[in-house]
Image (tube, rainbow, N blue to C red; front, side, top):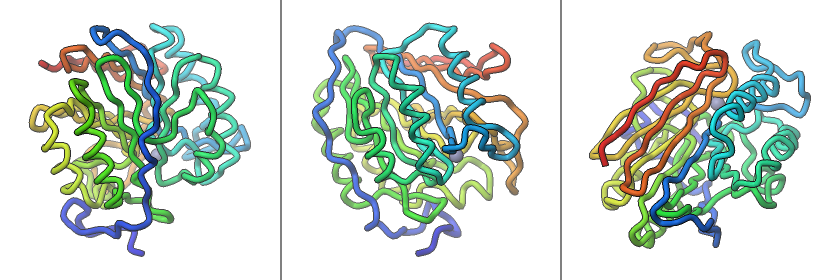
Length: 292
Ligand SMILES: [Zn+2]
């Protein structure tokens, strides 16, 4: 199977290997008029060995720094979101996720990235508060979790079954706004090396997004950098990692020396999103609001 595509945003990928987890029955009772507060952590890259390092960063320690930083803010949110690469090719790392995230008494929404083992992730995080696929309704919002992993490949794609399930779950959302979450970027990041390993069938994905006016945001990990754009009225968001970052807008891979980070999101009843990326060493932030 080819893992890198000359132009992942136009080529047709292999679809078959990926399964969408059937929508589950999760729903959390929040008033339909309340704001839903999420905190997103992404690309944890944990190892079973707590001293494990990725590009010079001890990933468990840097996650702990990000978590501590978040807990000093408005905590806990209504749910936590982890958008892939929970572990660095080491399923023993899921035990750390379970230990660190299970005590907050809010749903922890997880989806796999290219360094995860999706089956192991679902097995290790099979119990409450973890949700590892499908969707979750939180007050006036529906949060949809997609699996874009192609086993053995850095780039991703959504299977035909995932695309059909996405279309269905957006169509059945009633008057809820939708936030769609996945690991791989569905739009170019202006970074040649990174854009070779994005979502290969982004056109198919975006065609579904375009069919459903209730989609208010799409959010991903994978790119280890901050991104915030608007496409056809839909907020597009990427979030830096809780470990090492990638230098944005460069042709060749390069590490960015910025610290661990995470994102807070306020999903408003009118469909607007107020969001902020917080860097764990300094409490300075990129903050912005979109019109509804
Ligand atoms: Zn990653």
